[in-house]
Length: 428
Ligand code: IMP
Image (cartoon, rainbow, N blue to C red; front, side, top):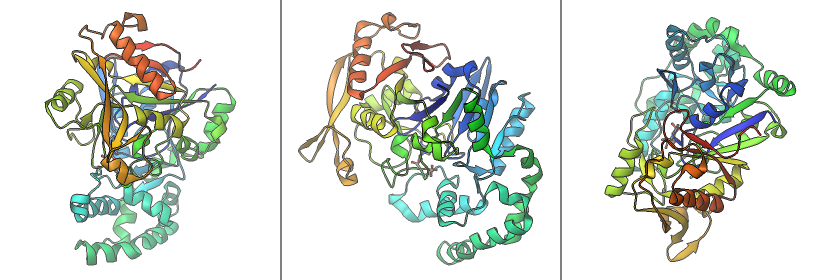
């Protein structure tokens, strides 16, 4: 059972590292299949701490082949600065494979991301400003630049010319910015071509061969279900497929290769950027949760919006992704609450909704119907079996499990790698 997908259930930052850590040495390949350097995760190996934005976490494990799949958008400057920083710290970066079909983020994508947000004013998405949306827009508009284009200067020049055709009008006439020349972009990209060349491969083929040999391939999803371009809270979403289906299309393997779908869900909810968030807290309980959970963005440093656990969202994510196992993270953060609120349904203008409403306006108007579970005050950070947890914490987990329509296989009780309770092995 070698193909394992890891996806976020909520709006990102659920702590996917807990699952990748658990699979640890049993992993042979880690594939990033969507997004770009809008993600951010801190990986701790021994006493060393690494902040990665673009590279798959597998780059830090000597036995793993990390892959940047075709569904990713790559900012080459970021790619090489992350690689150089790791190399300087003694990490072997030579195993990285990059899909020839992945798209490239250029300076005009970053510029367009920022000016578009500014023009949107109070309707802005709250993007990370890394050029993600404009790069995917070019991909869909068929004016994107792909990794393979870097190895044929003639083609590259033609493609950049095509990409800039309309954009320069937009930049100059609408956004009051300077025009960008083909030469400057081509020059900027070609700087990386020779360093990139040895990493470039038909990654879909490599992954298929690995799966055929029975190796363990982990498909690491960036962002999360509620930020997915199709299934998230559109338009307040990222521009890629952040759900499990994206693991197939974003890495070039058939959906039948995805044997296990692991959803990562926090014991409460957070969100960065704009958009609906029914359980959001604006009071001192929210402040408390943000502080306890240290909820500040890894990429942007922005304080995250925080709220209670939202059961309909987990149920929705279970359905959309076909989740087989949940990893419930940060349960320890809730320690000390007398009562733990859980959103079990929504009230939308006086009507009860048990599931996430398909209509965006209704979701914007949704307020949570909360159920209260008895809290616990004991330190749970040393619990290593389910039975080590206080009864009320056990009951809370069992209640969430029942509401989610899938099993909670792993529970995180602290930031360290070993601070987990494994109820079902993710590889069994
Ligand atoms: P973009 O991905 O930069 O276009 O941003 C679109 C939305 O996704 C914004 O609300 C971002 O805050 C959010 N977003 C993007 N990446 C992440 C992430 O890794 N964690 C949480 N939110 C994210």
